[in-house]
Image 1 (cartoon, helix red, strand yellow):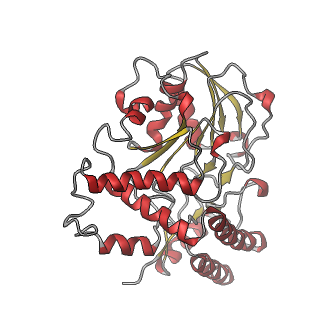
Image 2: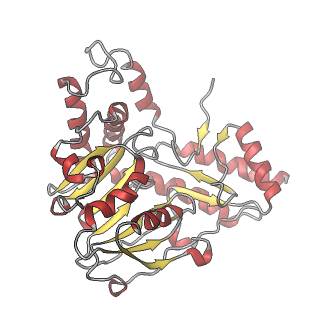
Length: 359
């Protein structure tokens, strides 16, 4: 059976070469006589995998030495509580920018633990843009400020990092992680679920500046305690062993391509092809402010609910799957993460052109 072009927002497609390596090593990981899925996480052979993955992440993303890289579980959604539990221990105040569903969920969760303020929101225009932000918008007494870097559902992305002064900036980078170079030193903490660009579902990556560790509230559960997780090298309990192994392979794949600068060029080329078609189409339309368009998640509509449904059905029959938009907004969404080849977007655009011509 031929593989389809999978435009899912997550779990999403992985590089075929990575899947081939994993398949070849499935029963016997490099002469160990066992699969990564069944070996002890305390064994020397697995220790090499997890430490190698952390080192590779640091190298590929250029993570400074004064940041810890944690491989945890619970998804990005668990971090909606973990962030305030670990950081909301000074003034008890934090600032949030609401640019979509996940930032809003994080804001609502944080409200359980302190005085949480909405600095700006794009809800007034269905989260179709990123608000303009200035340093004076943020409370200098806040324990942290929070953004969602790339908005998977609505297809927007920050192109400039907000200036929060001395207030640590926290960012959910789930759907744009390792898609392009990133200056980690601009943030106090970043986190993301791995199932978009990094690995299968089950792994959550947290990168936290060391001076922010040890500030957790007394009632912080141990499994959400960054200091506890850092002190145990992400091995307090059994880690998500298989996704961490795949993460290492994905990072090696990116490194072999030429690193994140090359990855960004490839992603920009794919996104430009699709957005250029949408901008010239008489049927399809992208609702996002052009300056805030996501490179990873491209949303669009065809003019009516009936046409949208027909397009999704016909596209799936033609081998372009998971193009239906999120249930909260409808329409369509093409998630074109790192592993989506240019050919996939090229063929999708050709299909869209033919669909427009026939409908």
